[in-house]
Length: 120
Length: 108
Image (cartoon, rainbow over the protein chains, first blue to last red):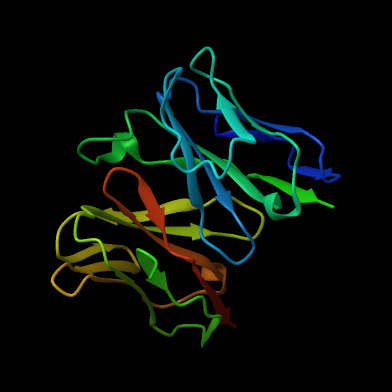
């Protein structure tokens, strides 16, 4: 596609519900990142995939957060037993080449518009 | 202390003014420095990136990096109302770390 597509754009969940957020990266992009952006804050790194391999999940805040990218394209971020502090915008970004090593235009991140999660 | 510090603003300037946005950082391992612009309810979009100390120009935008002081700046010349957005500095070592963002308002 022309850009990174995320769905749903808006999600309201009751505390304790499970949610799943989808990211459809730019076709052919190898790297995929998830970020969490709380109100008035910058994006905080959650996890990183290179193709289907999850190479870094050090930013996931708890074991309630789980991400997958089984076929190396679409990715899903799942949050189990949602809490109010999970309310944030979840941003997905992709890049053509790997996210490590020397930096070039090929590993510039293209972000989606985000999924805004509100936990009541 | 966070790895990247950025004044959240808001910063309001009249149209046509020169805007100066700044970030400081603490991790000397950061190698690449970026500025992103984020409009309301949109994802961040990359404006500029650089990896060396000094200045880099792109149209009305100039990015400046001073690694000795761990300080980076973005200057916007001839500011326009369409420049009103949140500007995020970002730095990369192994992963990209973002500042909080500065909300900028250009007043017509």
